[in-house]
Image (cartoon, rainbow over all chains, first blue to last red; front, side, top):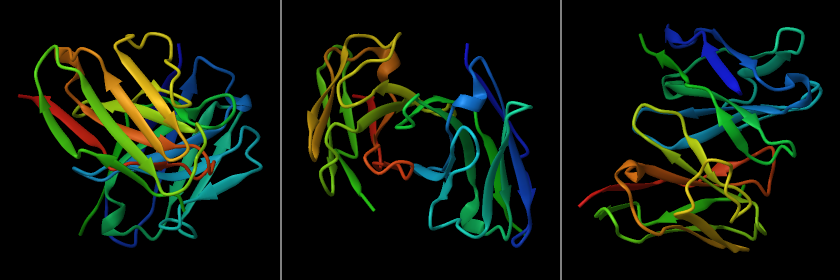
Length: 119
Length: 108
């Protein structure tokens, strides 16, 4: 059974940093592209970033480019998101998602972790 | 970037009703369209992939159709557990996927 467990969310001041983690199990992690998707309170879903199975290819939404860094440790079956220079508009539940074998769509989602950026 | 729209933004329906939700892409996305169901406080769940395919475990009352720019999600007979928000998502410009704004289905 695929399991994705996010952690690392919390309250942070504007301009601060936070690192999210997503522990994966139930599939061959190193063969699988992963994404982060966020959802601001009461709003819709927004794709944030993606990374290939090897970690050699990454991409970011324009809203976070230059501030967020996605990475992975395949020896630990863990996905990360380093978030710097956080803004109020980054407040959201952050979901990690396992993409399908072709990397087209999120087929499994974690339960999410809440990031609140506020002074 | 490919923009996605959905209509209606919300609807009220009764158990047993047939429900149709429409999703439109700003440019052709072939069949690279997926649908998700999200209940309050929960993560989204994949309902339909590549326009019309059902993942294992998804009830057959859910169906999807369309190609190009226009797509539909149909629930043939609405059940109490189907009251939720539904999102479409395009996969034509991977990895930069985009989601529609959502359609909330609630009880009439």
